[in-house]
Image (cartoon, rainbow, N blue to C red):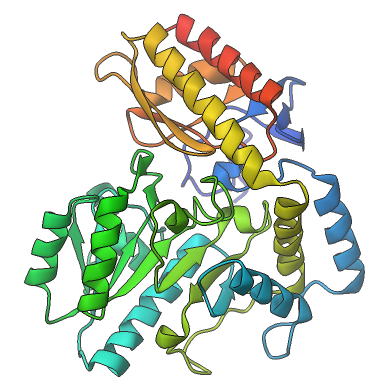
Length: 398
């Protein structure tokens, strides 16, 4: 039966804002009513080069004129080129390609379990992850996500996961001691994005790295949101002065085209042919998009721009916290992933996002009391100033 005029055939899994986007250019989005919005969401930290980037358009048009998909039954030159670039620009030796962050984390969980079986002879491997984390919506990834609200209604959850408090080494030690006979890996974000834009503590991560090495646990860094330059370093783990055994990538890797990856060091590359696969993973079209993002990071020196704009954004948010102390309580983050902390009982993230939207500024919540700024990595000083001025207007109305 067709939907009524006021309904939709799209399943109701999203609480959408009443905004229809028709086109984009750079950091700007145009709605169906003709209004332009300054986009500090970037498809949730995904559109690294902004919208309708000319280099990305040209590269993908050329790729479509050649080949878009052949499957992993054959060698794919674009995939080999991308794997080489990632290998040369990270601590990884080998790559597996998929289509999203959840898929990349599912691959990491499977890798950890096989590592436990083959390297540690553990029959029922267990992965440790942090409370308030987010690792995806698929069943294993959502179980690794240490937030009960994402678990409710989907029980029974898979076995083999336990949790500790982020940035709390005593909590980690306690969880490790409790599960020492089963633990094989730690899956952790260098900065918790959905959990409130909480940066990792370098001292915690350095001790975590030591403990993982001591107990032969794989340290797996979930770089889905902060990887590919958003933190001001290419990888979030670089902000913390450590090297993981494996890490996962997606979001900004493809600049808006779906692609994800699991990157591993040789000592934990335990997958064999048939262990894991993806129909679309690493297809020529998606790899061309990622290669274009990678080349633009270098050509336009975007890491430097992220560092400069990150300082500008941090200073700007700090000034707003001082100006609006009755509404705001602080700011935190790295580079171009910054969180504005809202005072409890004053306003909520949803209220500020709505007020900002009315002023032509798009923001995204990170929990009930944090608003996240994750603009395209190409945002300019002038555009960021415009975003902060629009934020002022929104706050003034609250």
